[in-house]
Image (cartoon, rainbow, N blue to C red):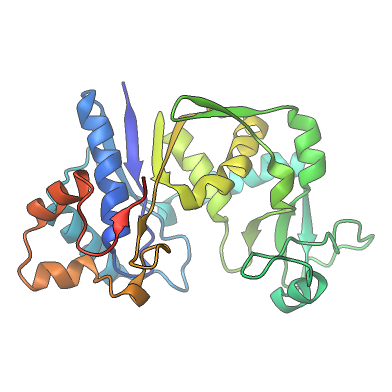
Amino acid sequence: MIVTRFAPSPTGRLHLGHAYSAILAHDAARRDDGRFLLRIEDIDGTRSRPEHIETILADLAWLGLEWDGAVVRQSDRLPAYADALERLRALGLLYRCYCTRAEIAAASLSAPHGAEPLYPGTCRTLAMAHPDRPHCWRLDMARAAALAGPLHWTDHGQRITADPLAAGDVVLARKDAPASYHLAVTVDDAWQGVTDIVRGQDLFAATHVHRLLQALLDLPTPRYHHHALLTGPDGSRLAKRHGAPALADMREEGADGLALAMNLRAGRVPIGAADP
């Protein structure tokens, strides 16, 4: 049975791009009499807001989307993430990092404009640990990739070779966030039995890391379906700067959510267009 999910973060209101992704995931499950799950990724306690969760639920209902089972909240899943971290720590794959974002940026001046700078490995070989100092936990990517060996996944039925080294030593936990997106989403997708992950092309690069974590934690690998993004008039990713309204604004103004969902399914969007 196919199991898909939609996993928004309640750090703001949903927009048309979110709606498009949710509809694709919902319809993929319904076509095969499968299950469509809803997970709220509220692990970022400094930015997540309860009022956004209520708005997300209302927006999905307005679009005519129904999910199966109870809504899962990542804030209720912290022990599972702690267990996964401990397993990786026992394998000797984690190390404390004390670098600030400014220090990392300064050491990565060669990073392409607009790209997230790769961590230069400053703390990887520190002889002394300072548990009382603010720190995050990073994955020693070279060691982890060597342990896991060659990895692949399927995306729209095509075989993709994983290259986690391109992401550098990613953060898996911080003092203010007990698990990173990479760790939490990998653990939760396996726990919920997700068989098919439908999400935007902007998360394709993250899948290289997720595939590695699946191998290290002995978790199953779902099928992936990274869909094209909605674009603005200038061809760039649809965003508020293009005038894209929040779904809640459209709903409050009396727009027909069911009609909007049908238009998105047909590739007709109020602003911009779906990439080919």
